[in-house]
Image 1 (tube, rainbow, N blue to C red):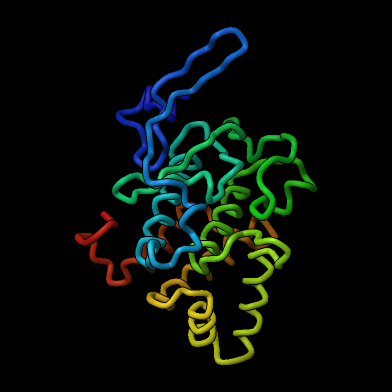
Image 2 (cartoon, one colour):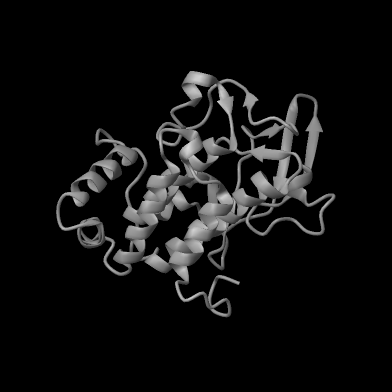
Length: 246
């Protein structure tokens, strides 16, 4: 609650939904959050007209910044455990904010994980959860990788009876390595998914998603490394004076 309300900090984090207060009345527990009027990412992720490629990268960067804060700047670290499109809200200016900390857990200082029951959402849950029952920051990285794949392809993590997005992406990457090459084949395929403008950038974003969803947790980057990758895609010249990235 301190993290979400900003208590003990100079300000609430701009990419976390701010908690204004709470109420306990009998068995009723109510949390009061700031109002975010732009809807959830889940409602927009498949809409390539309302969510152009640059906006998609900005959302990925916003969510990455929120996770960097939770994993690397909070003491002790916090694992969200339910990073997904419906838990990312957009304000009137298009800034993304992470919400729903009902499954979040604190990782005690000196520990690498917290033991807990398997929780999360199908399509986003890291494969090791079911084997170890251990929540780690690398589990959040996996979920973020799935979210990044959704942003890059305008497809959902799990869409009806179709193969899950992680498996689809891995298949695409395997096909591209033996054909025209990643930089040529994947952008063409993304255009077939409706991602026309910025297909090159979305291809690079998709590759970030693949790194984040590696089956081995230790092979995944941490969120600081992920954020650096995203900023390089958004701003390859390194100019810090322009646009969304400051």
